[in-house]
Image 1: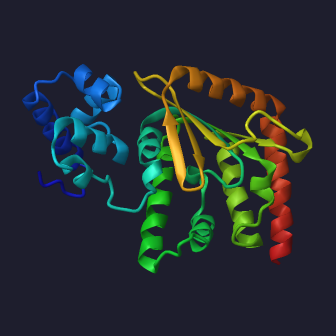
Image 2: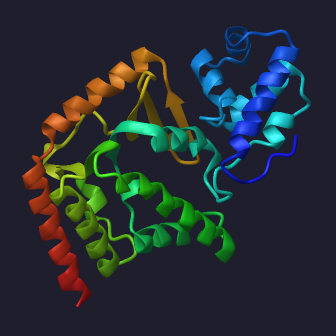
Length: 274
């Protein structure tokens, strides 16, 4: 199965999975139960609409006895670097109709400017080569293309005040980054809210959280830590995530108050940069 590094490879990957599943005499439901995946996810993979995570591919290989073929030929959409633990979340992000995310320390990836993202990658460990960093940068900036559509996805961004106050890349970089978020908020492309330090403890303190809704699929929640991340589709967990997000959002500044605070912080950075 020669899977090339382009978008069309997903369809060939799906065709191969369907062929191997049918040869094994399994229905999609039976395969999903044995591989610990949802039947809907299997159907999307076979239709070329979605890519399995690395863990999914390993389980498919194990269940179907394919000797590692699905893991070895796991297609990448653009051939650029993305952390393995983020693969499934990236797929959901690109298909989402609604995204609600909380950022504890960093500006969310789809909102990052080139200079801000570059500053983050320069601090990665182990260090990246220049080529690795350039590929990662292109991938990170490419994720923001979902915002080119004026209506979808609908994006709520809840920012801990620390995201604004930590000078990633220096004052000039931060001023540009915050102005970028403000501009998106002013034209209502995103709905940014800031959780000020004065709030104290809140419902989302433990980690970053991203809630995503896709057409004809139940919502999921993605949480991430150092070198790890997990997409949860268990609805009891998703509902808890929704409730926690709503509680934290209730403690945040209003849309207009948040924009005003971000403008003030950007001006402070601009003054420091002069």
